[in-house]
Image (cartoon, rainbow, N blue to C red; front, side):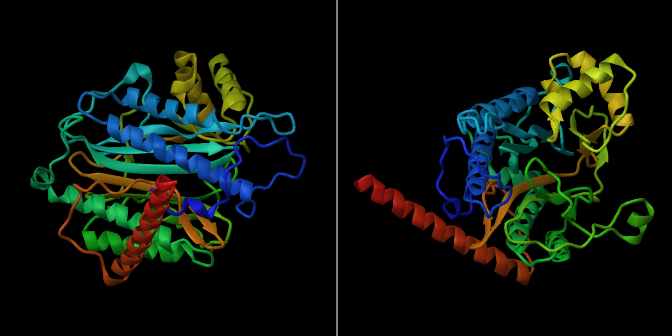
Length: 410
C-alpha cells in the first residue's frame, strides 16, 4: 500500500521530447513521477497475484501472469521517444513465487514445473518494475485459501501452528519499522539493531543472507546496504561478511527487504535450478561454447543491467546449456532459490521507500493479511514506531476518503 503518492509531482505520461540533461535522483520531479508510476504497477501486479493464489494454481502460470501485468501496464506509459530513443520500461526483477520453506528467487522454467499450490501453502511473491530505469520492488506473503470464494480461517491457521502468525507479523512489522528508520541522516546499523530487536520479540530469526539495498537508475542492488542481523564471530569465520557502515541521504531510494524464519535463519541453496541471474557489467571473457555466447549475446541485448530469468529466452535448451560457462567466468551473478529446513515457516515482505524532503515515503507493498495474528508483542520502542505508522496511515486513508467523497459530489 502506497505511503503518500501525492508527495511526488503529478504525472506527465506523454511528455514532449526533451533536450535537457537527464536527472537521475528524486531531486527531479520527473524522476519522482517515474518511481511513483512503477510503484503503482508493482502494487497492481501484487494485488492481482494474491487473488490468483488459489488451490490448483501453477507457479509458472502465476509468474507469467505477474510478468504480463507489469509489461502491459508499463507499455502504456512514456510512449514518446526522448532524444529519438524509446524510454525503457518493464520488469525490473522477475516475478518469483516461493512456496513454504523456499525463501525466495523461485521462478521456474516451463519444463520444470513444481506441483500446483494447495490449501494452506505459505506463498511468498517477489517482483519489480522500472520506468526508464527507476526501479520499484515489493514482496508479500500469504496463505493459500480453501478456494477463491472461501477466505483463510484464522482459527484453523492458528491451530495448524501459531508460529505462522508469529513469523508473518514479525516480518511485516520489521518492514514497517525499517521503512520508518531509513531516513536522511540515519545509519544502517540502527536499522539492523531494529531488525534484531523485532525478531527477538517474536521469537523468530532474520534470514541472514537477505539484504536491504539502495537502488539507483538501472541499479537494483547499490553499494549502500542494510543487514537484517550482524554476523556472529562464527558466521564471520564461515565467510559471512559484515555490512560496511553507511548513512542514508535525502533523495535516495531503498528496497526495504525483510525475510524471517521460524528456523535458524540460515537459508541455503536447495535442489531447485537457479533461473534468475544478473549481468556483471564489469566482467568480460571470451566464451568458448556456442550456447554460452548465445546466452551472453541475449543478455547484453535485452537484460544488460537488471535481473532476468532463463524462462524469457526463446531457446530454453540453449540457455540452460550456456549459462554455466557464463557464471563460471563471473559474467553473470546467480540468484539461487534459497531454502529453510523442511517444516520451518518463512515470511517475506518488501517495500520501496523514497527519501523525500518531506520525509520517507513508502510507495509499494500491501497490507498484512488479517488472518496473520500472534499473541506476542513488540518491544516498547518498536510498538511506539508502529503506532506512529498506523496513525499516519489512518490520516492518509481519511484524507483519501474525503477527497473521493468530494469528487463524487461534483
